[in-house]
Amino acid sequence: MTQHIRPDFDSRASQWDNLPRRVALARAVVEAIIAEADPQPGMRMLDYGAGTGLVTLGLLPLVREAIAVDSSRGMLEQLETKAKEAGITNLQTCFIDLDSEWHLPQGIDLLVSSMTMHHVPEPAPLMAHFKECMNPGAQLCIADLELEDGSFHDDATGIPHKGFSVKDMEGYFREAGFVDVRTVLVIAVKKEREGAIQEYPVNLTIGKA
Image 1 (cartoon, one colour):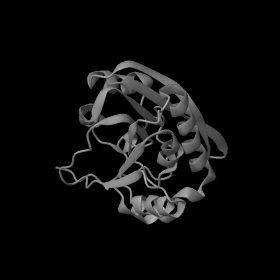
Image 2 (spheres, rainbow, N blue to C red):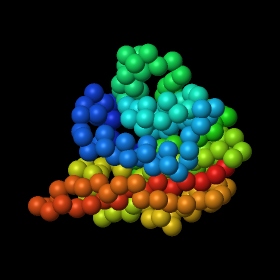
Image 3 (tube, helix red, strand yellow):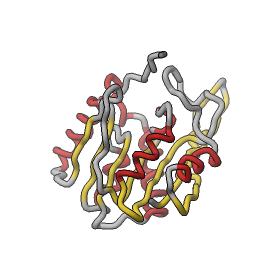
């Protein structure tokens, strides 16, 4: 069995929020989730692949509590520092070891994930697990790259997907049992590639448990 090589997010955690393009993307994802999913004060939210919490913290004021899940302790430490400095008490972090058996918390009303699924080797089983963790009628919001030519990342080592077509992403939702599935464009990320500006669309797909 081939060992799956993963990007080292721990070493990048302290500088993660310093890239304006990354912050702007997270802000656009937050705005799209607010517009499409309408977070409510009674909701228990989970952010899968939360990183330093750019999306988590953007949505947190709108919900009752949030759980930030990530496989990078370094990323979660950055989020914990931000939460402590801001006096936030309705946020908990959850580290998962992808090389061991793990389960997400239950009773989730809003499950979000931004720019994480293209790092997941097999999205289908994860989507099924999302469904198991969510209350009836809960909403799943996944933001990720539309299928691209592989040039989005400066180093694509260990990244199993070059984004997803709308058809494929919505297919994962429906296969896992989500209904009312739809997709909206969030933003087109611009990067310089070979002397020209290339645009990489990021979509938000929404479904109901």
